[in-house]
Image 1 (cartoon, rainbow, N blue to C red):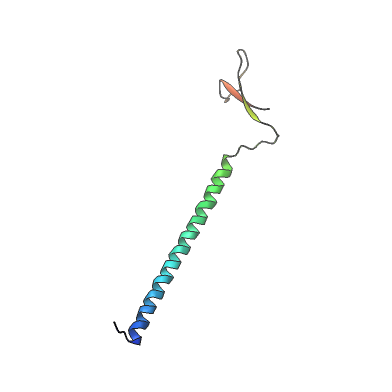
Image 2: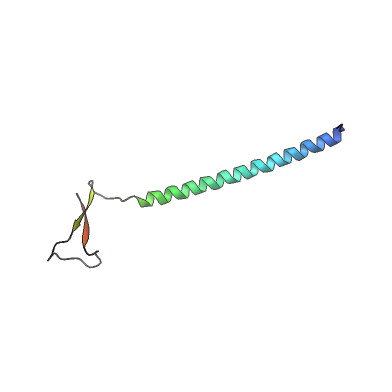
Amino acid sequence: MVTNGRTQKGFIELNTKSRKAQIAAAEANLKSAKQQLKSLNILINELYIKSPDNGIIGQKYYENGEYIKQNEKKGYKYILI
């Protein structure tokens, strides 16, 4: 197929516009993915248990006759070992 210079130039412009649109879409996807990663990192940081003291968090069951404070879960308590 023989094309003249004008047709060939039109194809090049069309291809360039298409590539620019693909690049813009990829950049938008990258920006969105970075925002999602940032949001997930914030959520992950909220899952960590932070304590002012060093130690291991353990679980101890209440014993019969032991007083339980108001709003405290019944049956067990968390202690810092």
